[in-house]
Length: 163
Image (cartoon, rainbow, N blue to C red; front, side, top):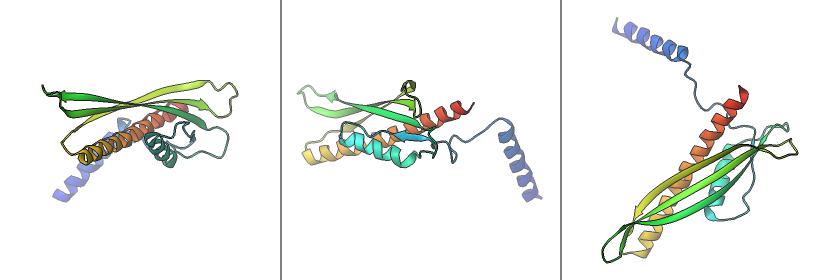
């Protein structure tokens, strides 16, 4: 009897989600139809973002693809400074600006401009190698978050284009 009630509650919950318009953000075609241009600067961050997006985005066979260009801006800030001017924490701010154009148009008019801005801080210690590892780890985490954010923005863009 308890099992039957659980099934009824589960079915009711599924119907409720369906009726309120719940739709997953990603589906098989949400990231198809995009081509990402290779960046002109070959910094490590640019290459990581290019490879991350290139692996996720798939062009379609027709010429109805969208072309994505992006640029990266990295800034470092000292955020915890003691009286003896020793820096205890450092902040990394990475901003990626991207634009979307249609592939088949000669005008190359930008139809969407987006930005992903993420920052994170890391502790600085007396060991230079530990600081290097902390900085690289923080940068890699930020870049992964930026790739995920751009993919979400592209999925929403694609969903709005279909309407």
